[in-house]
Image 1: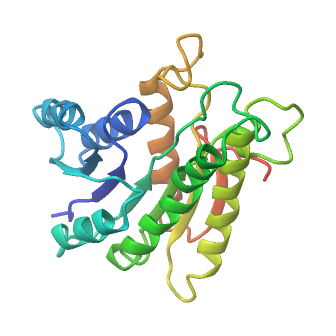
Image 2 (image 1 turned 135 degrees about the vertical axis):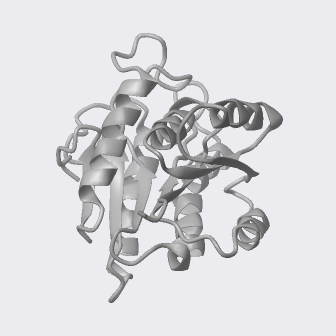
Length: 233
């Protein structure tokens, strides 16, 4: 009998995180999804009633190191095939580096770049060698090579920082055979993407999970879109 695959999806309350949890569960993965509120927990409980793998909700604020440590303790004994860190906030207003307050700019970089790395480090020893994947939800806006306008420069810079940190993370693994991916989901109809985006959550999540399953065991680091195409750094 094949051993069940386990995924930790950080930020599964709604939008793409919830969509990823749903797609993984539909394919038979067991999923631990982290949420920040009761509404997110209810969405995962509803998902757990559908055919597929098991669903477990856990509460986590990724900007709280004590909560990360507590989650690690609660999940003691579980070994994961996938840790997917889906985190992202966008600054209010114009979202430019010159106009944002210092606190707002710090919050964007902490949530979008630094905190995801802290989660990844906390669960690195819980990943299976070989098939194990650590994935970060990046953005096409995080591509420095493709950046040709000033749109949302602070958010873009924070995702570029995430990409850079993911490269450092991959380089730090030594002999561990772990696949590290930064993934851009495309322009998706979510609260952040807006109602005019061309992709549904389901379409993006389906493509992302295809990419994850195809890259498992490769041991490679990459910046990919939801169709599996390499994105320029």
